[in-house]
Image (cartoon, rainbow, N blue to C red; front, side):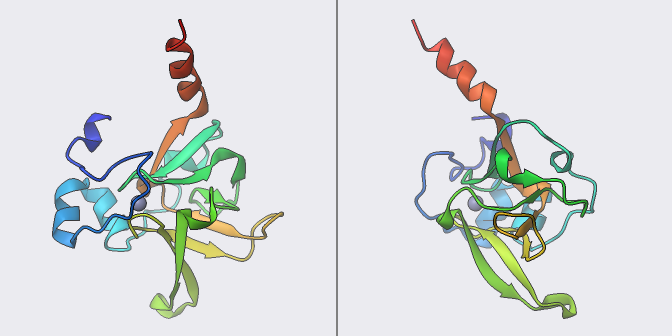
Length: 157
Ligand SMILES: [Zn+2]
């Protein structure tokens, strides 16, 4: 567990049980920028996330609870300024809700485990889904595929 997460008792890359914390508890366990987007449905400024152009192979997790959300194979260059994917890692990894705020009809994307706000999904993505999951990089954690492999090799005799 890295140091950023040591105050967060619900963070896990393996536990899939639903997380239900009060807003007050979230405020205590999340860094300020993550809290603002995940719990206040904020949006980071476009082109500010290092993940936007990242091409490394690996898995993207929810920064609030550690739930696996997307894999790098489904990431694409959308040019919209936010990390973009055409498909979540599994059906239940994200949940959806209609969002009619700001005079627009959009579909909000939330973490399937902790219901944190992640971003929105639009129907102008590439094949095979035609979907564009436009996700705030602040609420993503990235783990490189090679690191997992390295750990695996280390444990061999
Ligand atoms: Zn989550």
